[in-house]
Image 1 (cartoon, rainbow, N blue to C red):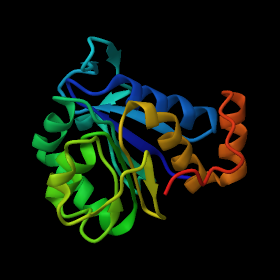
Image 2: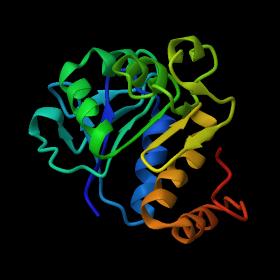
Image 3: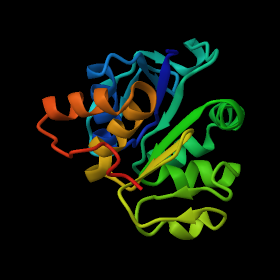
Image 4: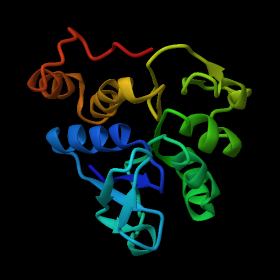
Length: 190
């Protein structure tokens, strides 16, 4: 299993980013937090400051398993403005897996054409930005190479969908049960 990367920009949604990192690490997945700024220290939308594992410039993105985008504002806009990440996402869309939650499906992925003809969800109010996608009003939409979530309350489901995709439903169920999350199947997403 290759390393996955979650990208942190100033103003990222803390719950979405840290929940994903925590759950993936509980499942035994290799995930690194990547600051797109010049500093490893990044402050979220609600004033929570975290230290990323490394900066974008310090990272070699050879064959990543997942590229993951938390939402939050202005975090999603800052991710969108960072051209090196856009280039990486374009390449990953053809050969790997991408997950985005909250505003990021609409603000980051849609302008890149990644969602064209695909089912996706996003934070309510951003749907118009995903005009080429098949927009679903559900917490999480998952297929083999693309997972989207609609906001902070869906962060656990979103992260477990990533785990289920990579490690199987039984591992996702085990991790979820250990956190007192009790669905009978991990296919609770669309």
